[in-house]
Length: 483
Ligand SMILES: Nc1ncnc2c1ncn2[C@@H]1O[C@H](COP(=O)(O)OP(=O)(O)OP(=O)(O)O)[C@@H](O)[C@H]1O
Ligand code: SF4
Ligand SMILES: [Mg+2]
Image (cartoon, rainbow, N blue to C red; front, side, top):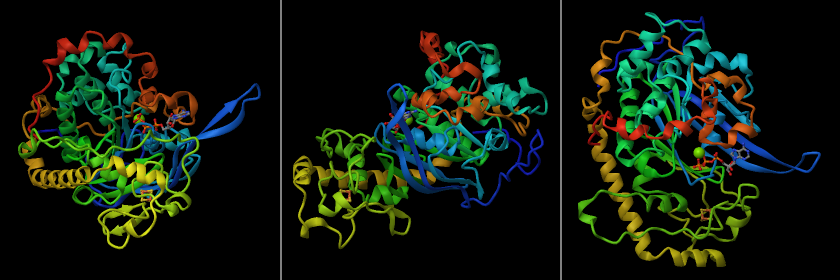
């Protein structure tokens, strides 16, 4: 896919702030998170006394390396979006530290964050609510330039049209409104907005979960192409492993505000070590003809995810784990590197010698949970891991090669000149403020959009827009890639 080069990042960005070197050593630590927490206070009564807290993110450590894609998966409510908003500093952490390129940005104010907003961008979950229905595409994608006071070479309009080409949209649609586009196209608009400032790190919060399955692959492939062409670093958040398996270099599995396993993609698929990862793996659909028609055995987890207001003691997965023993109820297992490239928080990890729980007494609850995990399900899970691992391995080298052409993006793309510094970012707008807004905005997870740069966007937006739009325009979607 031919994507015109943006600024090489070695010069100063328009606006006067030193740019980070685009080509900075791949693999260097770009973002480092230590002990990160976000507890949303629960207040009651006339005096609004705090009576508790939602422990949305409850002490996580990880790093994101330059040029990689870190996938973050976990069930609904486990804190993925909150984590995304914390690392983009749209939320103020309760505790912990966020470092970007070695600089502590944990408590930077609006002014301090301003230059960083160009380097750290977010793509929101819901393309229907993250674009202001009253603004044209041109206004939406150019918002970052305005917010950052950046004047791209050649003018804003030309640059916005170039960005539209890059993401596979017709630059002539500059004056159209969001409701005239399909879901996939809207997500492309959100991506164009995020790319405007030529960022280094893009946090994509469930970028395809609101899209039709047939469109999902296109958007995922577009993100993949853009990464190759622009040297982007991604944190991609998803509900399940099927979306991130194609694009991630490493994957973090979250449960109730904690990271349960963090591993290189191949290791995670070949031999997941955390029982929860194993359960998620068993739900990954495999397009394997040999297994077509075979009844698929999923590892069923007992009960619902417990409340993040009072997570279970010890290992917070113990109420649903089929291997839980006494120690699991009292002692929280630390996230430890049990194999090179594979960190796990479990007292009795899978695929690891010496730590099987057979010699210790299973909790009664675990025995009940174990009944839901038949031998067949475990065998199926192992087969799934093997099949996905094979698929992942097979696709890895081909990935880049195949990307090429189908994206319409390519077409117009070339004509573009350099975006140079582009832009500000969407979120930016409120950016500054968005942050502390614990409550209000936060919730609406995706809504996050709120921060949605272009102004009021976030809010009601979609409403009207959603309507017919998609349908008609769907045809304009580029053909899916055969990934
Ligand atoms: N502003 C807020 N005030 C109070 N609680 C919040 C707020 N934002 C999020 N939460 C709570 O924090 C927890 C984690 O929410 P979050 O949106 O981060 O989860 P998620 O993993 O992104 O879920 P989903 O997959 O459904 O998007 C949830 O219990 C949610 O209700
Ligand atoms: S075996 Fe224990 S520590 Fe490991 S996931 Fe199960 S409950 Fe948690
Ligand atoms: Mg979310």
